[in-house]
Image (cartoon, rainbow, N blue to C red; front, side, top):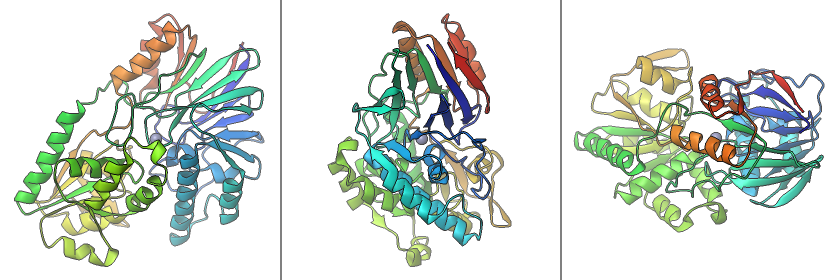
Length: 418
Ligand SMILES: [Zn+2]
């Protein structure tokens, strides 16, 4: 083995993932959720000029800063839908910065450069990337998400899981089987936590919405625009509820449906959207006059129409916020759960409405993370780097019990592997 790994971000934290291989290939280049992009990248490259970037998937914490380095790094690889999502998110980042009169992390020309330079790669297609042969494996996390396998000329195989899910959801099939590798760089978001069985969770979630509606309240369901909005609408459709849907998730749906090969069942997704009513901004106040369920962005309450609804309803004890995903520390969603308040602009709102959280995660739970490690060991793997989680050091100690090297790197750490 002979390679170097430099961990730029996403170590001991969830967000701004970025790993450099041989200072030449960048795996992801993301933004930390909840942080304003109004600052220089959290990880200056210090003069390193990677020749290519492989984007594992179209979430901001993995692709959000890619246009920022178009001046030094022209070649980008991703699945077609990831390219589309990354460019969509980049335009959104730019318009948020413009509205807030902040210095944007990149400009429209950089996004143009990105779309011009991004080469699209399908699952399992082999492509040359520096001295490596690369392949992307379906990671089952959001449409088009991948785990990246790099194989050097002398046969060293590096597998970067990205965000990965080993169970089927309504929107997606589970991840493809992880290939054999020598070095594994893996996410560890849910180490120590198993997810509830999906059907059980869906029923609890739907029952809670029904109860809110029966009491005349509004059920506000904040969702990430990419993946979660679509998954939740499929669940509500399945259980015969007719939601309103508001925010960026609608636009993302219209884009996603153009890539049916990256979905488990595009017809059912289409039906789920046909079953929902899209909200026009001037109709928002109207919805709150009667009991309803409103699926809306942003998933961590850091913007989007969700804040409009919560602002109006924060004191209403018949209404409810049903969070549907991971809440990064420091976000409004995390504050709502832990301290029962959120901040909108300069106003801190105490929440009289109920706050609940449902773990519709698109990540492996504890059992699946361990299954990935066991399979890696069984296939002769040698070193694991655990990142993208709040507790990767504990995960690394668990992995070490399997008689292989396990490391929880810190941001900025560099490793020469010989
Ligand atoms: Zn993700």
